[in-house]
Length: 351
Image: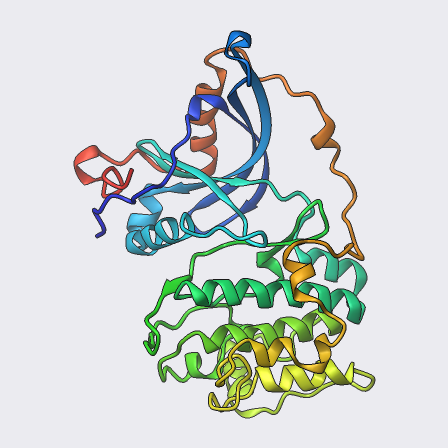
């Protein structure tokens, strides 16, 4: 089990956090909307400090569930790597904390919801919007790969729409650092999006992210994954043996790019060739896309989510001591597990 301190990871004070409604659930706990009280210094020292209440999202993970699932190293990897990531299209981790029951990850709150929900609402996205969203994921993977990371879990459920209309990639549970030519053999990801080399356990590298980008683009445009089956083994057989089929009227440029991205032959897969990501950026699907304007957020988004009324609400924190009591109440509801004894707690040395 990892007992090494996670360097440079910021911590936050749980006493300044008030938990609100449930945003989502995971294998080890829940994600809740929170109010965070911040003490901010004023430009003029004579004016002292001012208090500001901001919205955030806290991922609460049960220590006991992580230990029981033998996923301590997995969670250590997620925390230590995500705190290194700084990119405009990646959800920012603002801090971590722990108590005897739980680990807490404080994230920026992205209140536009998942792309998955937008697809369900619209059925399928127009090509222009799909192009805009896919361009941002291209830039995300370019950044991650330049830092030596492979993401391995791109899907609409893991991509959030910021209130600005731009995207934020979330959930870094499968991220891993790889050397230039290194491969890894862990079978992971979401079944519908798994690259053939993962399923066949041949060893995989960063090229799997470009495969998932192709499947992601298909789903944006068509509203469903190209490979679906209630039986996972049958779905894996389809991915390995069945040629990807496009419905009548599918955007021709997108079809060409998807075929290049999902090529089973790694020596032909776009993103994995001599010119790397440039082959993708220069494809005709992105002929009208200025990637510099996308990364600097100079493009006016075609879709901007409705303003969340919570953003304009003036918050008042609970009376003194209440946040701490609320944390205890939340632990009982979210985790339902007993505290971990200090001598058996592998997380204490992390931060």
